Every structure is written in C-alpha cells, then in structure tokens.
Length: 608
Image 1: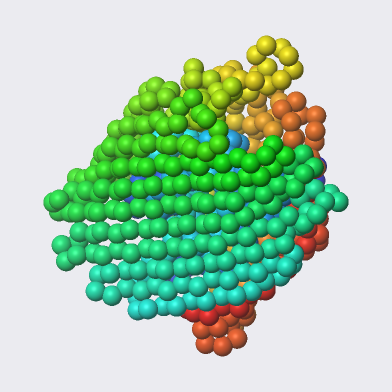
Image 2: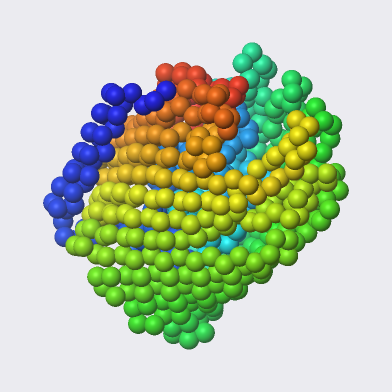
C-alpha cells in the first residue's frame, strides 16, 4: 500500500510538531542543565568521539535505556523503521535477514562490534539475525558513505554495536523470561571496575519453537547461546591494554524447496589492543582482531559447510594540534574461506593506508579523509570524503558532505566453482548530502537530503542464453535519492522519538525500484515514566515494496503497533512486558515469508 492520506497527515503533524516542542523545551531548559542527553558522543562517524551535531553526519544512537525499554527479541526489531533504515526477513526468529541503509544492499553496509568487522566473506553480508541484542549496550547507525574510514562495503552506512564496560564495583545482572511460540530467554552478566581494571562477563540463551515461515507450514525453531568476555586495564601513564571475545552459537530451521532444512551457525569476534600516549598530543593504538562466520547446513541440496575468517591488524595514530585533530593509520586484513565447496581461490589480503583531518575553525568545521586499498583479488581503490559544517547559532548547525565508497566482490562472486568471475571490478559510488540539525539540552531535530550514484553494480546474468543464470557481471547502475527527518525529546517523564524516511532507490537501466525496498517509512516511539512503572509503544508504518527486479510482484505495506510496560516491584528487581504486533497484522517483506504475527513476552530482571 502507499501510505494513506490519513497516515501522511498524522506523520506530517507529528514530525512538524515535535521539533517545535523540542525547541520550546530547549529554550526553557535550565542553563545549568548541560547533560545534552540527546546530543550524545558518537565515535563511528569520525573515528573519534564527537557529539552528534559535531559529527557532521546523519547518525542515530540507540542507547542503553532504549535497549532496556524495548527489550527487542532481535536486532531487526530494533532497527526496523529507524531513520534511513529498512529491513527484510525470510521468516521470524533467526531467519535470513537483510538491513538496507539508504536503499543500498545489505552487503553494501558494514557491521562492527567494538570496532571489529563481522561479515560473511562468501555472501558479503553480516548475519544480523544471529546476534542477541542483550549482549550489547548501545548501537550507532551512521548513514552515508564511510569507505574512506572503513574500506570496502561502507556504501550506505555503518552500524556499530558496543558491548558493556565495567564502571564501578562488582555489578551482577540476571534475567529470565519467555512467551509466545514457547520462547525462553535467559541472560546473566557480571561487570565492574577497580584499580584501573574494567571487566564484563556475560552469557545468554534464547530458545523458541518458532513460527511457520510459510503459510500452512510447520513451526521452524531457533536457538542461540552467546557468551561475552571483555577485560581492560589503564596504567598510571594513561596507557591501556584490553581484549574482547564474543561468540554466538546455535541452530535455525527453515524450508528448502518444500523440504525441512537447518543450519548450525557460529558468529564470533575476538580482539586484543594496546594504546599508548607517545606524547601529550599523540596517541597510538594497535589492534589485532579476528572474526568468524561459520555455517553447517542440511537442505534439499544435501550437506554443505561455509566457514569464513577475517584476521586484521590495524594501527591508528591520533595527533592533536590545537583545536584540530589528525588521524593516520594502516590496516591489513586477510580473508579465508573453507568448507565443502572447492573455491578457485580460498584466501585474499587487503592493505590500506588512511588519513583524516578534523579541523575546527569555529563557527566553521571541516572533516576530510582519504583511503587507499590494495586488494589481492580485485585491485586498487581510492576513496575520500569531505564534510563542511557551519554553526548558524548556538542550537543549529548546517552541514554538507561528499563521499565515495566501493563494495568488494565476494568470494562467491569471484571464485565459486563454475560460477565465479575473477574479472569483476568493485562496485563504486559517490554521495552528496546536505543537512541541518537543531540541538537543545533535552531535544533535537535533524533533516537530511542526499543522492547516491552507484556504478558497476554486480548482478547475475544468463551469459549464453540458455535460460539459466550462470555468471556475475558488472553491468548495472543505480541512483538513490532520499529525505530523512528525525526528532527526539525528553519532556519531563516523556521520552519521544520520531523518524520519517522517503527513499527512491532506482535501477537506472530499467527505471524500476530496487527489489524489497519500501520507499516511505514512519516510526514513532513514545515512552512515559510513572513512578515505579513505565509504559511505551512504537508505531511503524511502511508502504509497499516489490519482491522482483521487474516490479511485478508487489508486497503490500503495513502498519505495526508494539506496546511495552515495565514495573520496578522491589529494590533491584523489575519486570518487563512486550507485546509485538498488537493488532496481529499479517505482512511480508519477502515473498511467501509472512511475519510471525502477534507475540507477547514477559521477563523478570535483577540488577541495577
């Protein structure tokens, strides 16, 4: 469906009224209240801590309080309808999921966990569905190209998930609960800090019988056991060392051409780092990391194993020169694949040099970055970005930016037996964006307009005309235009957030909309604290999308309402109730894969 006139009118009123409300709140806030709770520090946008308005980027922070209030079953539930973000799923609970940022493919976006890249080197996309939200403290979503900072695939944007750090004395946390579809959820953690040492240990278990992923089908279950270890120590001279390990392991069931199928999966990141102050104005950091994406699948084609591993060495140097900051570094990584398929090549390496300048000429600010990648498999790519900000007033900042990025061909596209094409070039893009942000102590609003042009898109074609797809080639172009308007406020006991997104992702060869993308999206989040109680809800509306490139298989739009409540019934004890899809709306974001429908979950928590 196209968003109806009443939806559009309500969306326009909500998005227009909220900035006025937040401006009034900002003007009446106490001058002593400098908490800037809705102007948080973010690090993903510029490789350095910057407040949201200083980042000169379109950025969304989903903080610890948001994760606790919403208590999402999956990251997809958390991301759905956020500014510039669209998601699709092939069923509920651990089933194939994609995250589209500003209309780009799921493999044209980067996922980081505490700075460590996680993806499949064979498919090119992260397995978003296999990460438990309870393992993370916050998420940053940066929209726009970041190829000059993070290398390949940062075309549409970057999502970074952060794990908790210990901040005070030993702090235990426990939770247990369950609900619809015979779902059970358990988690436990212990964190703390003492004498310069910070630690966090956590574990979680999720188990569900699941729901049918096809109409009339059988329930398809999912289980996930996750563990997290994080430890760091800061010395008297401000030098720091630390380590991280996160592992998720489980099983998901699905259908394969009408036959039962299942995948045993492992998602893992691990890293060690050391940071030293070389001088008062120069800090140097060395990071060694490894990520793994592993899957053993039994389906209609038999048994298959796809294991990918990426090992990375990264050296960052940050130099402060007055009000300016310079970041230079080098990164080397090696991808390796193994399994039941005999790839023509099973490993490749990439070496990159990068530099970024963060310059402050108040009221003007300038950010410029450049990166050169040399990849063993597909050659060399140079990317860059330039952003200019102007502080119009104490509360308003204008920004304009231009950036380039590229997507690296995957191992499947380059080397898969009988299918790969080693002559593929990287997809390339350039993006122009202008935006304005209004920022107050307890509120903000942000408006962004952008256009992204992508060349050398890789698609699978029938090269010999026999009716069968048999080779990937660089043949396609796309143009994506969009507008994003978001706002948020904390007014007394109310927490409000709103996002309105319009995206026009066009295949330039055909004029059709890129498949599985909605073009209009609205999300409203409202929460209210009532003493020991809290109440809240989310309303998410999206218009239709097409399941095919020819735009003939139309999937209807939907409006979804989720409700939640919390009760602190004793010191350090609380209960949370979430009711998803209250109206039991049936909708699809991928053909023949309906959502699970109405679901209720209840959990009890111990800890601060």
